[in-house]
Amino acid sequence: MSNAFLYRMPSGIPGDVSRKSQSTIESHHVGGQFAAFGLFGKLSATTGDFVPLESTDTAVYGLLVRAYPTQSAQNELGNAVPVASGVQDVLVRGYMTVRCNAGTAKKAGKVFVRVAAGTTVKPVGGIEAVADSTNTIEITKAMFMHDADAQGNVEIAFNI
Image (cartoon, rainbow, N blue to C red; front, side):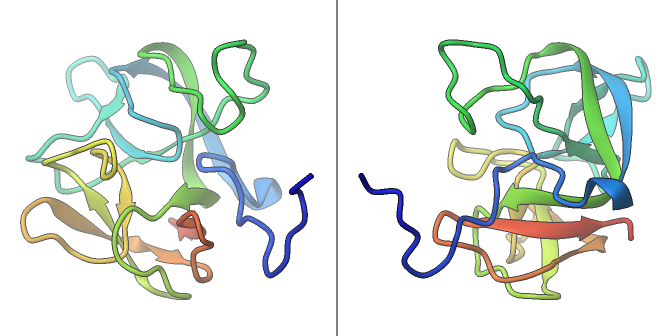
């Protein structure tokens, strides 16, 4: 069995609200396919749905919260892909575990979100610790709460 933590426990699961009592979570209809939980999105001006970001966006609305419990035999814990429609929870203020896809997340460090040129490693709406010219925007009301773990998982504070 290899379930021993020799140096540090994992920081959490991306999309999981880490301090529930200090967070504001709203339910919104999702109007697009997000690559994973714990990604930033916006409210559509035409439909009011919570949708993935686009290259022209300069602001975000919130983070897509991981649905729990996940009831699917195909998706293991932490690997579930969000549904493209239906009602999902959105964190608009609080603390969440996310995956840092680029750069080195450090305590009180700046948080950037990818708005263009997404890949499976760096999805649109994903969190990064370093700016990427025109493909990312800085989230001025967010910061890393500690260093990332070995998988890149880290807690961020948003709109606090």
